[in-house]
Image (cartoon, rainbow, N blue to C red; front, side, top):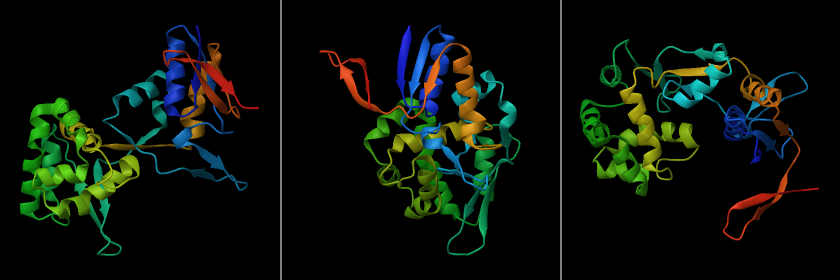
Length: 255
């Protein structure tokens, strides 16, 4: 079956890759002249790459890491020391570290938090820890039920001190979705926190050894095209053609 896919970002290319594995023939349509969508990168006339943001791969990304493995490009991930480093704006030039010891989860995360005395006081740590208990006990079902609250609202419901949000979660919220805690669903951050707390290397970070366009997206394109699929750049979609029941019948290409 030939399947049209809108967009050559990570989602579109991954979809095409797995459709190829299932025996289908995907055709990926991308309006830009570059691969990657939100992880696209451009090379300037001096040969330097410009990316849309700082792209990090966490140990808690099992599907993404499996994709790297299937593409045989795991060596392109540069794993860093297992630590989280926060800037301290009120102390210019200083940073606060959460160092995770080589211990099972969630012990390593608890130790990392307890060892850090730069950002949070002991009462703040205790109230924050108590606030996380429902998510840790009830798991993903509870996390998904909290989608009706922004993360700021959830913190208030759990009586977590406002300074915890300011010192820790503004940075985390913007890292995950480029928005503030009062704008992001609590489900997004709680899902990440749950994975970080329950997996030993969940919060360990890796960077690509080059631009995402070349080092991740292009291998997916090569995989797809070598198996009969297509990836077309500069192909904007003008309209989604629908059937009477609302399902998609096809795409109308601009131009």
